[in-house]
Amino acid sequence: MDYFLTEDQTMIRDLAREIAEEKVMPVRAELDEKEEFPWEIMKTLAQSDFMGIYIPEEYGGMGKGGFELTLAIEELSKACLGVSTSFAANALGTYPILLYGSDEQKKKYLPDIASGKKLVAFALTEANAGSDAAGVQTTAKLEGNKYVLNGTKQWITNGGEAEIYTVIAITDKNKGARGASAFIVEKGTPGFTFGKKENKLGIRASSTRELIFENCRIPKENLISKEGMGFIVAMKTLDKSRTGVGAQGVGVAQGAFEAAANYAKERHQFGQPVISIQAIQHILADMATQIEAARALVYSVAKYIDSEAKDISKESAMAKLFATDVAMKVTVDAVQVMGGAGYMREYPVEKMMRDAKILQIYEGTNQIQRNVIGQALIKETAKKKE
Ligand code: COS
Image (tube, rainbow, N blue to C red):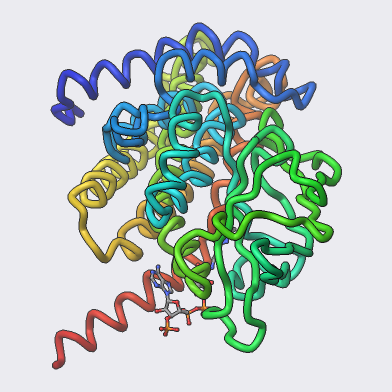
């Protein structure tokens, strides 16, 4: 399908594709095996100005939107979801500053993020808070001109590798979701340490760690927006970034489809390439159709969000839900089309299948996405009645 990309968009997509093919594909199996963070690739992405695609030019970014970011994420995901997760999580961590940060915070942090000098991580999840985002127990107490943070964050992508952390903590226990606030915490602040690196099923090139805050004192200027705005900052951040997870789904599904289709042309059974067998053709036909439908939805939603639309929760949840369910199905089918070869580490699709599973889980499980869509539908139908 031709999505009539502009010259700039085509350039971003083609450059991302080149980096994916030349820098990511040759090392993806090794990064997966060794659970190694892709620093060299991050540096290449930074040199290509990709870390600031969506950051305004006044802060050193490219000044493009979420759609252009989507194109880059998709291409990287075709090659390796571990790499694209490390890249996309940077945007997730940056959105709280971009959407709600003060001018001073933007001036202080965004240029280093846009240049790739510093990586970012978003820290919401805890032992008792994930799907239940309002269940955060990490506390932040104002003492003089410092906030004192105590608590532990869990499963934080880019944990340990990032220099800047956007952290959700409770400033007023009695106010539920309205008692949460968002903060910027820099690596190296006394009282801020990291737990063990998690050993994962997939996206093993990405880093997932605990963040531990023990009387960690940060300047009160590091509060993002106002006290009590933390839940909203987190929700709006996720609304923005979930389309990127959808793009990851489209990318990994496309990568798996291409590997399976190519293999089906080479593999001969019953005196013919298996792609000539209708049973295989039908699986490939369904895979290709689902990928195109997912891409069309993800691109439309990314453009809708860039149009400064206000209410984007339902659409971004739909893009994430649909494209990541497609990714799981397509990667499983790719392994099936390739049969025994698909199951072997010699070929990339077993890793793609392992990697794809996280897309249905992180940045809100797909059950949560259905809740978000359901709640939005209730609101919409109530409005129509009025
Ligand atoms: N934008 C703006 N405001 C929002 C919002 C959004 N997307 N979602 C909720 N709110 C507001 C609500 O309007 C409500 O405001 P009031 O207190 O004024 O009524 C408040 O926030 C609380 O909302 P709600 O009652 O819906 O909160 P719940 O605790 O029921 O949780 C879900 C809502 C499930 C949607 C939320 O917890 C969620 O998204 N969870 C998943 C989080 C996630 O993705 N975790 C993965 C780890 S982070 S990578």
